[in-house]
Structures are given as structure tokens and as C-alpha cells.
Image 1: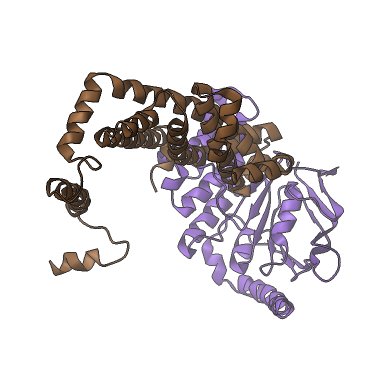
Image 2 (image 1 turned 180 degrees about the horizontal axis):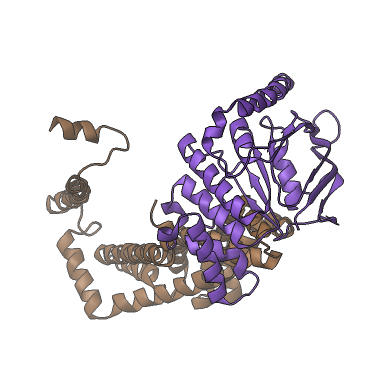
Length: 266
Length: 261
């Protein structure tokens, strides 16, 4: 027992897996218990903070009437479209920006200016220009993620050790071969990590876009629920967003393990 | 053929004036075909920079390097290089790393693999051909780097302190392996080190380099017969040569330390 305590208190020491799982469950369970306590205990108005069973019922209902799936699907289409378009351009451009001084010199001033503009500040303009349809939300996600991605990817590209390029050159590689066969594969793990992180941010932009102006999506669903004072449905929408985020993150992790067997063992 | 000629190479960094660093100043040397040449010098003397210039990875500020009489103006597969560290492609297996140079030339895959396997075998890593670099020890990584360079059939192999990061036991094993391969392949080798024992054990000719700005201050023919055994290191001739190099380097190290202060 003293041994285990000693382990727990030692920085970076591994702990028994069961203990780790227990600790995780304890925190999650504690939060859930707190929720039960304040709602069933009558400490809060359940109109604004519904108890767990009410949320479960709302979840089940919205699942049955199809509204949850419809809105989740709508959000997924928008986020994937915006994210895909952004990544499609940002990945090659970011890699070039990190390794070709001319691309860096050309793009850096503009990118760094726009990067610090919150995309939310552009939403009114985007609504004026393209309305409140799917195009506007895709544009919000695109602008929100693109300028972050390109800077992070340029950094990934700039971090590739010079020795790898030099090794390739002394083996007879031409410039093109160095780009295709050294720069590209060397940046792949960083690219996947960047996509994973920026996907998380894309969810934020999506929900903001849906809250401001939309006629479908999980953000719209919770906005409608707010107008009807259905706090339970807001909880459902929040859970759904969290769940989809978790699944997306797992998919990225899985892609990294599958695509990069060489980055696995450390 | 593989004759390297260095003609009054100089190399400067930074702006002219007080902050300018003169790494090399009018350095000349000729490394004849098939010679195992070693440059030994204090750290920071510019010996690695010299290799970079010969490899074509760095342009000299003055002078020219020639390969078989032709001026070098860029990297090429005739001059292979083994770096100190971090130069294996981490996304390729051992075999694919060794195949890399050959695969750039668009030869038939069967031929490429056969040749790569031969060199993977020559460095004793046959059972690791499908391992990735991060699964290998430091010594094994350098064996792969050597095999990768040899498989490409360069005329000259430039080695930039390739065993510098290895522990002393592994280093001895690697030196023996390298000598064994050189005795068979007989290519021109230019090997850079700060380890005098390593220089004498490996080299047919040892060039002693001064502290910055780097110049060749002594050229020592090392006549020990091949194959060499490591017991050489205790022979009186070896110790005499070692003393000679130590003596010239000692003054240089002091010069380097006092100019750095």
C-alpha cells in the first residue's frame, strides 16, 4: 500500500492500469453525481437544468422523431465539407510555406494578419454576401480553420531536419525527388496531428455559425430549444456534439496508427 | 576513379567585420583515388564544413573543389555521405532506406532489392531489414547509413564523425566493420573525426587540421598493413604517431579555447 502511494506521488511513474481507470471513472462519476444531487435535490430550477432522466427521455424522443439525426447529419456535412476544402489547400500550401522561402515571404504577411481576426467577426459580412445557407457555414469553417492550419503546417514542414534533405541529395536526389520523397513523407505525422487539432476548432466555428444564423444543425437545434425553454434538448445537442467530436478524434488517432506504422514504437 | 582535389578553399560566415567567422582559410589537399583519408582536428575547426563543401551541400566563399578534375558545384551520387546522426528516413524500413538512392534512378525493383540486400547483409543487419529506424540502436542506424551509401556505388564516401555519438565498445566494432568493408570495396574515403585513435586505426593518411580558421598543419602517412587488428593501438609505432598528432593538436586546442574566451 505504501508502495502504491509512493508511486502515485512520483512524477511520471506508471500506475497500475486498474487504478488509472478507477480514477477516471471517479471524476466522471463525481460530476454525474453532482448533477443528480443539484437537480433531484431541488437545489436548481429543473426548467433550466434538467435532471439526467429528463435529458435521457429528450434524447430518446429526438432520436425517434429523427430530428437529432437530421440535425447531426446536417452539421456533419457542413463541417466535413468546410474542413476538407480547407485541408485540401492548406496542406500543400502550408508544407511549401515552411520549406520554400519565396512562398513564405509571399504568404506570411497576409496569413498572419487574417489569422488573428476572429472568424466570428466576419460572420455578419459572410451572411450579407452568401446568406445563411450551407455555403455560409462552410465558408465560416473554411476561413476559421484554413489560416490556422497553414501556419501550423508551415511549422511542421520547417521542422523536418536538414540532414534528411542532405542525405537525399548526396544519394543523388533531384529537387523534385527531395520534395516528393523526403519532405512529403517526413511531414505526414505532423500533418495528421495538425488536422486532428484543427478539426476540434472547426467544431467550435460550426456551432457558432449555426447559432447565429441557420435552419438546421446541432447548433440550430439547441438555439430552437432555448427559444422554447427546452433545456433538456440543449443538453442533448451538447452531448451529441461532444460525442461526434470524440468519435472524430478517435478516427484521426486510428488513421495515424494505420498510416504510420513507423511512428508507432517509441 | 575517385580523386578529390581541394584548391585553396575558404569559408566565411556572417557579415565581413567583427562578427565574421572564418571557418576555413585557403585550405588545399589532394585525396588520391581509393585512399582512406582521415581528417582529425579540434571541434569547431571547420572539418565538417569542409566535408559539406566537397559534398556540394555548401558553397565555398573562395576556391574550388574538384572530383576527378571536374569542378564540384552541387551534390551528386558520386560523393556519398554518412552523417553523424538523424539521417535515416524514419518512414522507411532498413531495406527501403538502403534502396533509396538506387530507386531514384529508376532501375528495376528486383535489381535494386538484390543490391540493397547485399549491403544490408554486409553490415550484418539481414535479420533487421524490415525494421524501422526507431527500432534500431545507434550503432545499427549507422550501419544502415553506411550500407545506404555503399549501395549507391559512389566514388567517394564522405564520413562526418559517423561514430561520434556511439559508446566506445560499439565504436570499435563499427571501425572494424568499416575497415573490413573498405578492404573489400576499396573506395576513396574521407573520414572526419576528433578521435586520434580512430584516425590512426582507420586511415592510410591522416591530415591534422588547425583550430579555426582550419588549415592542414600536418600530413601523416600511416603505413600499417591491412587487414588491421585493434592490437595495433598498443604498438610502439602507433603510440609514436599518436604522440605526434597529440602534440600538434594540443597547441591547437589551446588556441581554440583562448580565442573562444
